[in-house]
Length: 588
Image (cartoon, rainbow, N blue to C red; front, top):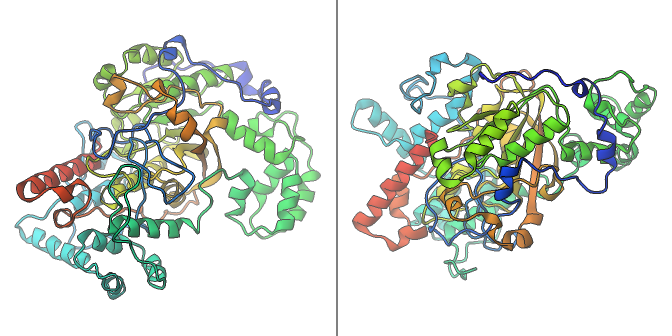
């Protein structure tokens, strides 16, 4: 899959790293600086984005920037930005079994870019990874006048009708004519709708403006209420240590948790590896204590056996002590500075695995935004890394450059994912947030064919983001058999000091580190969500796809900037939005 020369094994990669003990005992994390060219960019923070709708509809899957927001209160307004935003309606609409009336998944119907592989060229077990894009395309393409189109139109009309429970709630609020509220309830999980119906809560039609923007609409308020209800049953959006994440999978009592917290590194790893619910934790800890550490082990995780278990395992994740021989994949690295930092880090530890760095944009666009990009690319290639541009992280199976990379990656990174801005809407608005939610579900589904069993995936994001929300990351991973193993603060990560960017055309004139607003108001809310790929061997559930609004819903609503448009102006803007939605599905 690459013409680059393969590096020869470094002696230090064949035994436990001699540096690990010093790193694990350190009070502070050492900083690793990429090569000199990266110093021009500066490190770490991002500035607030422009007001609603002021940003260009640019980029999908690149790292983008979060707006300034008050992260102390969840229901405070969180202005739009290019990184993540606002709040959403509940539930995931599961992809149903293909109906007989729908076309089969084939090379004619699958959304394609110019160089995509034909579906027939994709291994059969990986085809399901691209099916989600087909489902979205079917939802977005409007039926024509043919017989098949008439059947599709009838199905669409039936899908738009609300069931009695949803309709009753709509009637209770006297919002039957609100197309946006109807859309929110239509796509919401029925259990969440039932629970909401039991409450006395209702949207406030006189909601006050917040932080210089218009008051939240009824649809946005209902959307938030449903979303928070879903997240109430999930793990915290903030830091979650290794044991707490593991406890979420198993019903572990307080006495057993105390035993595990007191266990050393060797014993804790043994228990977490062997526990299946059939034997008590105390028995496994006694069994682990009888086993002597291997002095000949070449696995990094076998080092520091007598150190405190919870602390040491947490340090492993923060210090990026990944498989030294497996390749690492970076998705959506706008200016490639994170990839540069990772390559430097791996070289310092004697790793022989390559870094495969990708950007969503083409090299021509990157040259317009980052004058140093060619130097950065050369630096990566000098370190035996491979750089690929114009890569959609949700469509790896049909990207010919990834042919031959199946089951190659031991680590994958996606920093601050974002599906792109739609002018006139905050990222958390239900009319546009479906793109961010689907991004995470399709991203993790796409990885299944390329990540090794036991491979690590890390997605960094602000825990209060309202575009790609933390729940999208957790649930997207879970649905594709990536087990949540820890969440830790971004500022504690060994790889935090890269040159973060907006990931859009604003980078040409300025960078997030031009000011200190981001550092002081949002940095403490940035988290790194960590997962391990643990496939069961059986087919996973279908990828969960959030339904987009129809053109009719957009035209009939008074949401975002559409509320100030009428007639041909509104019709034109809706057509533009739908064209943007379709390019998103095709990864353009």
